[in-house]
Length: 451
Image (tube, rainbow, N blue to C red):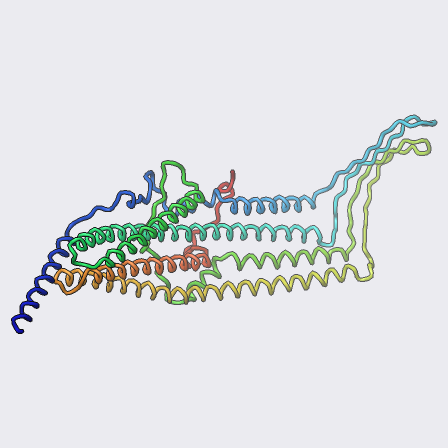
């Protein structure tokens, strides 16, 4: 019986040794992946950096052109408000042929009018329009920041799909190699058939992931190229996904930078000023309006024959309207107060979101570190599984499990890094994509948005 047991152990040792030899041979045998699975990632041409792409988008985007058109509209209205200080020329003429004793009838009334006193209405109107111009300038800057944010988020998504495609390509290559290896082992009746089916399922899943990520990459890259306006013969330079900005140590840095740079703070100041000068325009109607007038009047009819010049003053005064004007002034005061507190609410929500982004960023930063550590762990486990397979201590199934776990760790790290990059882009949008100590930033000139 001892001899039988020794013989059995000897046969088992020979079988394990045989499996190990076969595994070692197949591990070291390269199997070339199908050319159809090797999908290219980028074309060739002169490279355009992300900052260059953003500059192009700021000149070409419809959002920017619309914001700039609104600014030019308000500037035109501001010029019109300045002309209210100048005299106004007017003329009215009527000429006709008539029946009766007088065969022709003529009428002419021409004059010039210079405002002398309007109770401050013209000045208030000018300042109101100037506040509107300032508001549209801040809206233009906000539109610029929103366009840049959209491009940076789209750019991070493109990087994610590019790296995911590369990982999927590696999975397909490795699993195709494992599939060929399994077929040979099963042909030798060393492994059961279900191991082959399992590898085929994993391989097909990897092929699906490859096509899915590659199609998403092509779609997002086309959208990004169209958004930016990259011509033929040019390519967008894609930086490594792992290159990202580090979060500052406290949220006060971002809050102070936002208060200094973000247009939302100035926007509501302009809106309150606009309401203030609208109220001042209404208050001006409590005072008399005085105009200096010079007129020439000529009237030629059967009963009238005049030809005279007149110089004088015209005075209009709304002495009492039973409280109509007072009610409008009071309503405008409440509207001004409403606008002020609406701005306070918007600013409070803005700063609340900055704080949330900052603390979410701290959590995501640790998630990135965790994903990186887990990836190193899974890589080491995979190496050890290879060694143990060669030594005959593990089967091919355990090696595939460790490989799939490593690939999942890679994907998790990519997702964590992408989430962190997008969050940092949103946080930088709140600070107008500027450093707290950057004093050299200025708005784009008007010519940058011209057709």
